[in-house]
Length: 112
Image (cartoon, rainbow, N blue to C red; front, side, top):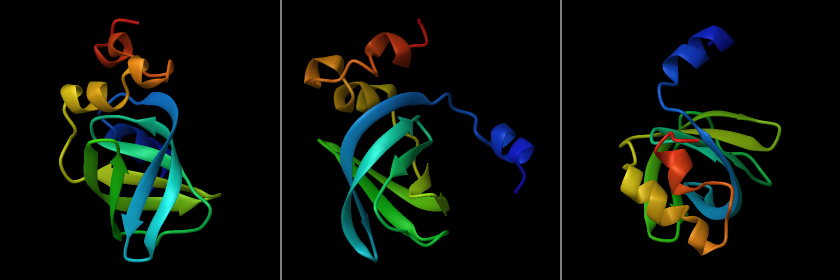
């Protein structure tokens, strides 16, 4: 897939974050760093690799997101969620009150 096709396929706006989570796959569970996230997917950093087209679950706090691994390179993985996350799920998981100031409710509503 070329870059232009990939950009057109990504319909949801991504917000940058830098928070830890767990990625659970057939290879096992590993700690990852969420680099950016949207309703439809995420980019995470990890120490290792996960096979492309494999299933995984991204877990942080109360959020569980079943996903397909769409790419893996340079210690990062692109995830496409099988079910889009709701704004409420994103806000409750990445609320600034939980200690992060990189992903707030204003950004989620597109009011930045």
